[in-house]
Image (cartoon, rainbow, N blue to C red; front, side):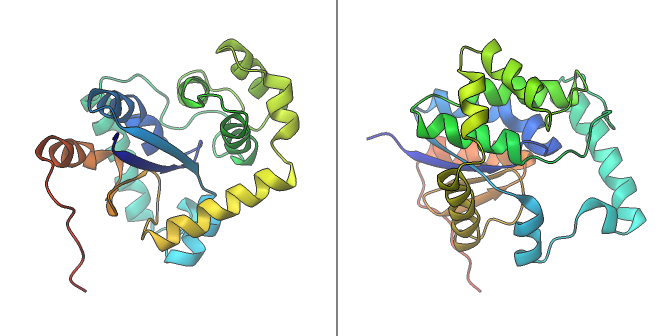
Amino acid sequence: MARQLDYYFSMVSPWAYIGHGLFCDLARQHGCTVNYKPVFLGELFAETGGLPLAKRHPARQRYRMMELQRWREKRGLDFHLQPKHWPADPKLADGVVLAAIEAKHDPEPFMRAAFKSIWEDQRDIADKDTVIALADQVGLPGAALVGRADAPEIAAAYEQNRQDAIAADVFGSPGYVLDGEVFWGQDRIELLADALASGRKPFRSIA
């Protein structure tokens, strides 16, 4: 039976973008089933003690910018540190991911295209025409998915993901969960790889 990986993310998270390709490659390598679970970070931060970027101490903001440069180099990516349309409201793109899942489509190609569009191409992920074009580009029914993205059932799934994240002790994006063990941040992918390769039992908090 395939192992399950719960993948919590926001489509506007730079860290989810930086780790996305490597995480998906790892999941495929180990034959894992990925449960894609977009979450609205503003609400998740409010519940778990995080702060939106603008409210963080300037030292933390400066350090974040250095980390983006380090990981851009480490992962071999080429992206803008401050893209033109960031931050943008992620709810439309997150909703398209959920609508794709509801319709039994694989959302990963759309996610890959959307991450690239934000960070490399500086496109507006909150714009409906942009999102439709991105979905169409990867063979998904863009107009239908965008039309479905704000449906009550999609909103309920979005809220359920938030509740699931809190229950799982996920507090940021990306959060990868294997057998109940949380790996927070794309810089933990190597640790996730070790856990998958070894088949060890999950670590638990002793608190």
